[in-house]
Image (cartoon, rainbow, N blue to C red; front, side, top):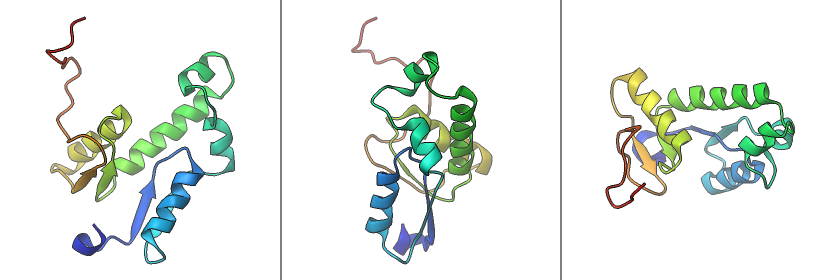
Length: 129
């Protein structure tokens, strides 16, 4: 995307500072890598337990997690380009919000599965309930 679109900055929505550093190393010095990751955020998200379990057990601040997640969604949806994993509902929603706000599909790269419109009750016909 750098060569084709002239991308100069990248927002990385990740709970891991290691992922942000990997992106910085991979993209090099010509690209500004921006992230909300930091010491406070890492303490809130860094665990072997799913965030849902930690919230239920009162181990993390629900409001802070919600605000951080909404801020990530907003920033991702305002991006001019999207790179993510569409197997993640979070990434798919961020891209859908971007399409809805822009009125067109911004350029994207999926790191796993192809994009498809979100259908909340779309079930795989090969999977029985």
